[in-house]
Length: 226
Image (cartoon, rainbow, N blue to C red; front, side):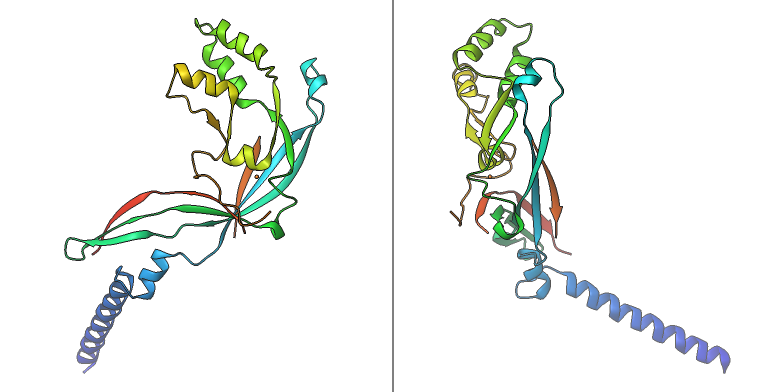
């Protein structure tokens, strides 16, 4: 009798586990109209990107050898959206393809100021990069002449918006004529996002936390459905 009860218990447990596994599998399949598909297509938890900048307050002294004095300014907060669009089911519903654009929406309530207005004095990254790139090359003299002609300095002043999402740099634009692979637009996030779409009248560090739209780019995915 004990053996019979044990056998029945094992059988029930096996059947129960099979049913549970089947329900879990069905619940995680990307099928149009299901909660799983909706959560995959438009992830619900909000994601925020927070940017902090370091403003150099003694640029002239730094050029003479002094230690830079910097002031941290931030955060400038953007909410990130990553919906999947142009969803297509392939191979009889066993695969799905989609584009995954990223859009950043400015959150003024979670920010210290207006990214279009607030100015930051920071390292002139395009100029420093150009000098390093042409050092000990035939282009070094030409680069130095351009730096003098454009009155480029070790430091530059731009708005938060420009530093994040991009601005057209004169030096890079000139180099672009000779080297088309050099992008004339510089921005810390210019390659991550498209041109911003602000809904309201941005050297930075960024953190992820839990609007006007700042921009977006697209990536594609192809998933197999089991």
